Length: 246
Image (cartoon, rainbow, N blue to C red; front, side, top):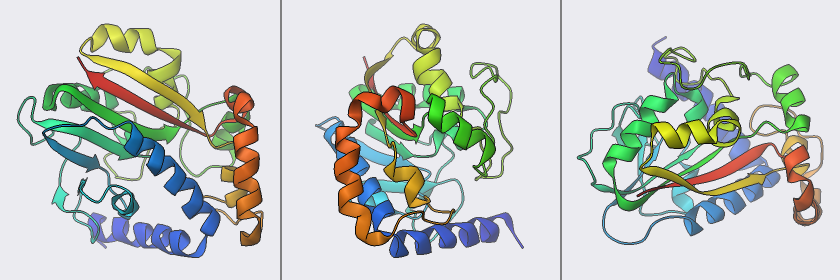
């Protein structure tokens, strides 16, 4: 079986989970709306890297969906670490759960800095390592979690297999070592950081684990999430980050 066929098989599993799990859909659609509110206005293309099963386009109908291999849900094959766009030509680059899959995430961030126009934005939804979620990611999640990694080292943090990962990288880059990121990429300024997804996300089972609550609990869980906002630094499983090209 080819690498592309394997990727599509795994994405098909995610697509079925999306269609069968109303809590997962509700959570991601809320996050997509938050992403949309952070996008830069004006001229230029908005591209999505690592489009996966293509659900972001439901909330951002004008986005150009790209992925590292051809899939039924992407418009163009693009390597996020070598963007095929001219300097200053993009209005927005968006990604959902993709940066932590890139072998060299700093190379991608440098490419985004180059390709974005002034005032353009990079908007990313990624795993976040709170005290609660770190335990889950390290011991219960199928992806690797290596918080001791140096995110600025010019080494591969994962293999070239598209779904390989180090889930700790976003927390390291945008929270724990954000000052170093600013020093290395001074034109790419962090303008928004938000911790999300406390109880509802782990209880939903995500895309790969068994749901722990019935679908009828969706509305009550989402309401509870809103009331738990102050506990996000301790409980959050996700982060939403926006960086602007200055």
